[in-house]
View 1 (tube, rainbow, N blue to C red):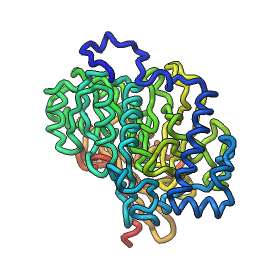
View 2: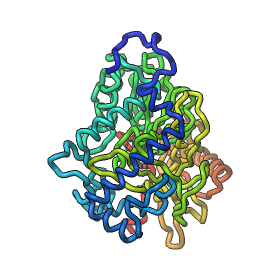
View 3: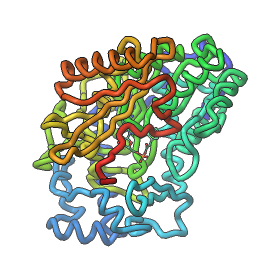
Length: 447
Ligand code: DLL
């Protein structure tokens, strides 16, 4: 248990939650991974019929793992495997050993269910505490937690982590944005946890209420659960007077805290390799890619008891960086996840991720940072309309809006290379986020 302190200044800038393991030399980290991977594969094989069958079909067994490189012979796990085993077929522990279930909201059909033993919850709290400390959170901080509580892992994940670190948690959850502004101010929060899009909503609501958040004690934002851009980071830093830090995770693997940026560099998220093994594969050939190349992130859990996953295909597109980091942590960095390969839009033959659109729009003169992408089918091909919104102090006659739309269209064409329609809306007309933002509205299905 870390002692609580009221003096933030008294804490060393390189404070870590678990220094020994966070700075473990890479060779020792590899040895630890091999030992843990071996028992995790054994556990999956012994207790989960799905893995027994898929290992046998691939002609491998846990004993075939002699080096970390041997993992490439083991089969992948995909989201549909989890759906096919709904609700409890992927569990490697009996009900008597479980203490919690979470589920991700399936856009279609059944959700994906995940389970935890008390040991899993304990390790999750440690990893989230480790992530928060890396991000610049300190014991004694007031943590305003606006991630949704419930089946979503964001709320409870950040909650347990902050408590484990020795912080004072304000469990606000999402929504009621005016009240959030009041509480941030009255409770003098040091830390805001939310999705980046909801943080922007909070910043805007504060402006409307005449509250200047940038002069409040708030110092860090831990933002994740959706893709966001460097441009959005600059916007959130400026509007909230904070350093915005990227935190990554997914319910299938654990929840938030699988990886987090450090305060020192804010350039890539340290993935906690003593609990997870990260690979990047080519999503077409499924072959592992060398360090530094961009592809799909694949994660194997090393210490999960209730639901170990072997080579889980996240669909998240990123790359790894194993260069030493100035913070002293030795764990590999996962670069900002720009999007999921199933979110990629193909418009007139050009591949576009919604977050690329964000990078172009945020900071564009006269625009607010709110946007939405509408997908339609004109009978021949997919078309894209980008709805943008003018800034609250920008002129907004019909002619002004048409001129802005024209400028933005040219800008998108010149930066991303895609031709699309642009509609400029008046302030407040683009829907605001309460949690994970809906960036794309697909109107093609309704035809
Ligand atoms: O979003 C867990 C989480 C909660 C992470 C709070 C961070 C903070 P799921 O609902 O299962 O879990 O969604 C996981 O969200 O595969 C990514 O596509 C996306 N995602 C999560 N964090 C980031 C991030 C939580 N920092 C899915 N950047 C993942 C980009 C992210 N995408």
